Image (cartoon, rainbow over all chains, first blue to last red; front, top):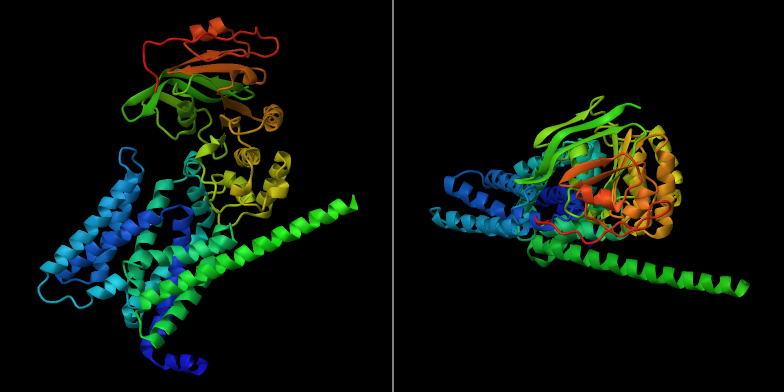
Length: 289
Length: 253
């Protein structure tokens, strides 16, 4: 079995998939931890689905769908962030509107496009086994930008995310940071739509992060653990989907959920052992008295 | 004793709702001002105005020596923080250096030593590696107070520091503030008038308008004349009176 797995590396599509999984794990591990820490999962879901509008319009105009999705998702991300600063709009309702509007536009424009849109399914459900070199270069560029930005401004990002008003009282340009961060989140979503698809991309941004959050309460450690969990989950997902001949995106997400279950189980065992040890220690202390 | 901040004929509010009307206040070194007033009267708006979080709609807020990086330390009301946010106690305290080390990549040894010193002063050094959500209300307030004073500000602003904390902490807090007041001016917002009047030096009554009372002894009659309908349960040498329910023609929010 191990031999056959390594034997797969002779195929270019497999090497590309491994690179894609690695880069997706880095971008999603970092951006996803930010989303989870700031409780922006629903916002991210909205951005993801809004980007489908961009894909549809790009198809209709005969442009690159990824470029269309990027423009659409960054604009909707900036729009959501802008609206969230205003008190007169209910943020969750606004996201709900944008979410379905994006999907509706996508469906209409794809329908109006003459001929059959062959790759559409791959945008909905992803296909890591068909990522192109261009996709990989774009993912690499994004990963570099995200890693550099988060390492350079880690503390500022941490402090702004924890207590925005306090950061404002220190005259930090909170809005600028929020706009940059939400744009990076939007681009992360778009780049990873190729890997797991619109419907499943949100889990790439939340499941490994939630598992990581079980073991650490430190944002930077959470990012690193998320990347590790994502790499393990996505690699196993690719291999399993190849051998069982089932869709890769769904298999990766399933692997994530299994990993999350294992993490939760380990933690429960650790906690109950800790409790038992503590009870024993207390009992012994009592005996001594 | 020189001026730190002067608010001159300022009005402030949110959107088209003006909460503070034509207020004047000068904060000087060594000041210890208690800000009292009914809910919705504009206490927190005043704090936001001083911090520069909202602009004056009219008049001006003058920072005498410019708005320096460590001019103001701020302890906000605690309730709004997300308790499950992944941040440690020492990181929270260090975040008070945000503006003295703008865009800091790594905190240096001096910063960390200063954080340690502050956490020891607050009695939370042993909790420094815990995440903020694991702390009790009082411990959390200590961490936030540490964040407010780590930069050694010239003015410390506290917004309702005694909510969600126990009596023991409240007592410690006032003792700590008494010591801090030797080094920095303090402006403290509180709903608990009786307690703060025994610690502060002067009082500002805020209810749409601001009436500055240059003493920590205030009577029911004075409160009424300041249009400040709050219950006055006094301590110590102040006459023991409870202010009667005050009726207003205009509505409070």
